[in-house]
Image 1 (cartoon, rainbow, N blue to C red):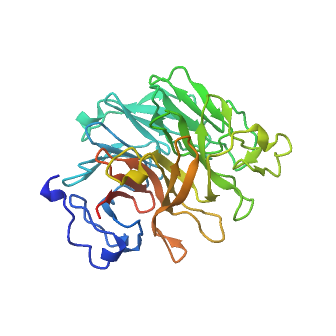
Image 2 (cartoon, rainbow, N blue to C red; image 1 turned 90 degrees about the horizontal axis):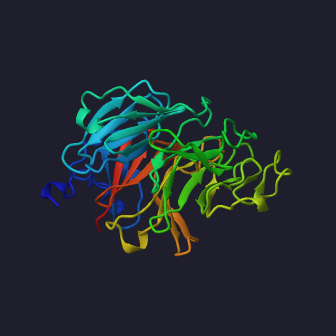
Length: 375
């Protein structure tokens, strides 16, 4: 590691006991980001890569190290160069898109979700300062704005996975059209349903050993503060049904639709994450920079509740698994974005960087954080 990447001395004041420092090579922290509020396990450090990405949501990184970030509020997609060292630079590489939350990179092209469309920006890294206009790959998805934003990612099979959320809080839409996860070839052909009964997933990944699809799912609203839980799910075969709208979290019958089909008919979640925490981006930790105990754990960004009397979420959690895929632990990894019942940040996605650090996007603060283990 270059000497320039050693920890900076500034920002240690007031934070040494909290394990919060700035990483060298990151952009200066604006005063509005109170990093001293954040708590991580002993030995972990967090810094800011940049706080110049408004509405930062899903992330993907190219093999050459360009970090691409989708957003929900401004119709823009961003590219961050030198995110892990040097002086990060942020560029806008697409504009005018409808809630372009999801980003995926393949063969030199950036794929972006835009509610009813998937678009592609070709040869993007050679044209960061003058990006070409996006071309439409597929426009076969619903135009509904409710749960219309999409996290996207390429799977081990080479297909692009695209979820379609339920167009409501609770309803029974066409399962081949809504409340599912779909996949298609990179050219938009061979669109098919992978999983049904998924109310709204905004994060998924594939187990590094089994290559099975795992995903978060947001539970329905208007059933009280503590029911139902958000979910971490595991798809062991194509076409499985995960309960929506009949059953929530594997054990809660819906008051309107539950009498039509029992919970026993559906795949139960691997872990129940808590009600209204808004579990969004999730990834398996495949790096080696964290201690061995964290290998192949699931890290989940909890965006935080909006309709709970006492706020929940606003943190990053981890779920440890045994060799069979059973959850053996579920605990808080990073927290402190909620202060005095008011949030100053909302984690939206996590991404394991090539060096093993963990990137976290925050759409409220417009920031990308970097977490490293450096006792």
